[in-house]
Length: 366
Image 1 (cartoon, rainbow, N blue to C red):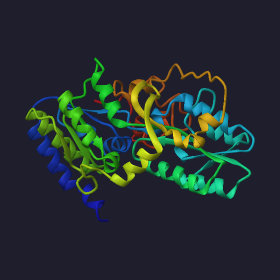
Image 2: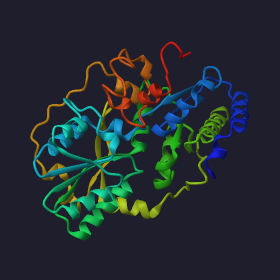
Image 3: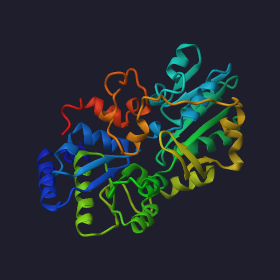
Image 4: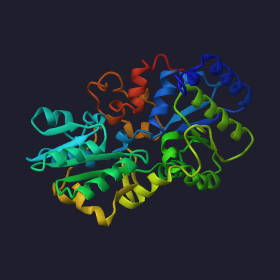
């Protein structure tokens, strides 16, 4: 299959690993900021094949995992109301809130539905005028254009029974926050190719220059990641700090300007809390003033929410790359994909889920 099989060629992978071993002279620390990249790295064992001492740091690249607990609890409070349909992508349903999750709430009678696009939620509102449909809109810049288009479509249809609970987060402010952490070990970044396909990489250039950190826009297949790591290491070895593009088949510097225009029309930048990390200035999107009639948080007053994370879960440290999932005493025992304590064990992009699916245990880690 074009653009798939050739990016999984084992012979080319070995050549890239050999070149990486010849190039690296120091135990470099590189962070990937994408859950899809994390799963490929762990599933293929790439992180264990790197030169001695080199380490991949798994960053907060899972949008489901960083969705604030308060947002999830608010979504469940809204879903529990009569006459409401809560629509969401499937990976949100089992993310634990303070007391329960959306899947359990649906089992108790709430009308919680899985949709595949935000337009599906708009269609539900159009077809069921007697119900109010709330779409749980989470994600990085990647999903923001589709959500923006859904709001614009609902406005054209004049749907008064559609709204969004918005919890979009932005990658560059998170990278900046990580680099300003005094305990940060990150020396280079692999940037998520799908985010940059939308936004381009111009926003990353000031970060590379200010913090003197190489950033390589990278795809998601094994050879993409190996080449991206090699490009980052070459910069580190040469004391360069630029933004380079490995994912040339899908990304250009300017990104998708039409998608950016839709996002700018519908959303405004705001401060946002990241689950497990905390409040990051300018790191989120909210509906612009002219679209606040579609804001579910304003439409539904759920009162004061008392949120509380599981005290045993170390998801925050995992999301920041400070700890590995296998450092958690509950990993693989009291916390599993079937019975998760934290979001990173649930989502298809969560680091804990990646480690668990790959059979990683404390005993087999070097």
